[in-house]
Image (cartoon, rainbow, N blue to C red; front, side, top):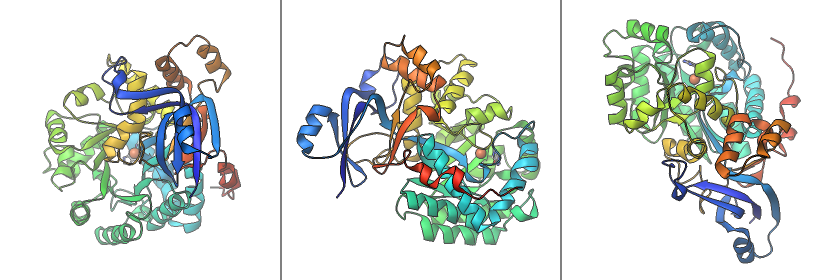
Length: 445
Ligand code: GUN
Ligand code: FE
């Protein structure tokens, strides 16, 4: 049995704050404690109370920093760690010119394993303790992803993409091989340790109707798996999709008519939606995922968080690296704030930090395990320092409330603001240099 006690300022959410004044939505303790045992939060409360009950336990004192549940990234591409920051294109050209050629390299076991180490190092460094990832079409990329997640004991979701057309030859499966590889990956990884498999038809353009039917079979055979795909990110993408699926009522109907919509479905982007599509999202409980840095980077459009929320649709928020330009959920909230400002909506920092933690956990149906610091949940914790740069420290000298401090973190913070990260109770950022990005063999293109 390993126990440790973390001391620091503590913030955890119980529900989504209705406004900045909604103090019943969260608990904030100036001198708080988390008692962790075997990777699970045993107890939480004021430090004096918890330490008296805990007895002789090693204490790590993080004051004056802020402890919070680890960040959750609900849409990211593992094989795009070397695609991020590729110049000048919008979605379809960006995929064809940069992304697809890069993803062909993940046919190699060694390359997949090396990049998995680098990918997880980046997640931890940026305070992300759970991610929902797209792997490449190659089974080996998903094996590398789950092998590394297991080694680090991180709660990770992911799947190999299904794609059988409109991509280079080295990046296509067939309806049958895509089905067989997915079945094998589910058998090997789903529900093993903290891993969850996600059935992943990449998007309508890269899957034939035959492959969509196979995805439907997989979803029916494995109703406990999540499903992820892309929806209505870009106008040219939508037009091409309508050509490829002329019988579909709209883009979403490609997925809906194949039985792929439900509460476990994550739909990246969902920007340019028609009224019927919004009705269908509300009826099925599927979740749009807002990817602010990506939507700005590719010039895709402005996500209507206010309109969708008003329909009772619950949206995830995510980086979408490598079209996204940062692994940081702080920077993701920063750009998200600006996109909503352009639409007349001011996202309160308490709502923003709820979104990146418990909100995304709810979207995944995992709020009993992650996204908050309640006893019985898994001990994935970030420690945030709002004075991590000189510019932030200067601003912090004039900050007088928790909400203001959170907003400084949201607008100015990045990996430097992440003091420490605990994964299943184990300190992980301070030790990540041991498998770090600088260690892998440089493989010139
Ligand atoms: N649509 C299909 N594949 C992708 C991808 O890799 N990134 C983004 N942003 N959109 C996609
Ligand atoms: Fe994406």
